[in-house]
Image (cartoon, rainbow, N blue to C red):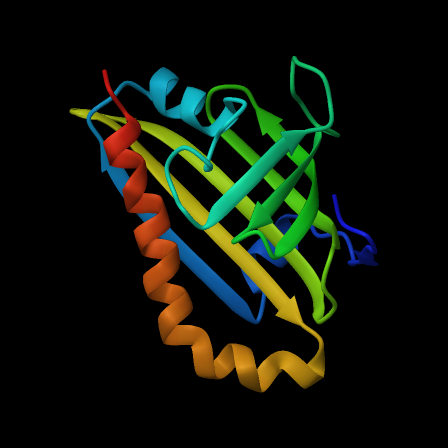
Length: 163
């Protein structure tokens, strides 16, 4: 748990589309949409399929829905508190990061969509970030790295599909 929280401006669908830093990736997985959705909502989601996420804790009881809150830690360094503003069971969920353990981000939101395909399902992840003005040059410089990392994180789900 973070010692100090830095509050962020809550985000919505509009921000997911207009954020100054926006990363959208899709991956096809050989599993039905129900299995792909399950991987997004298990107790150890992300922790089990990427080394970047070192801790995840759901703060709301099941069943999850709009208003659900969780805390997620990246590389043991940065913890975010997330609140879901959309929850379409089995299909889509979106959240706004409402607080971070480190300053510098004004808004942060993520969106996950699960769609059926002929051979399984497609998972699309959108990451949207707005830094404070001082950090904008750093995010611009790291943009190519962030693009590669987000693509890799999403693709790593394939090794955990297990039909």
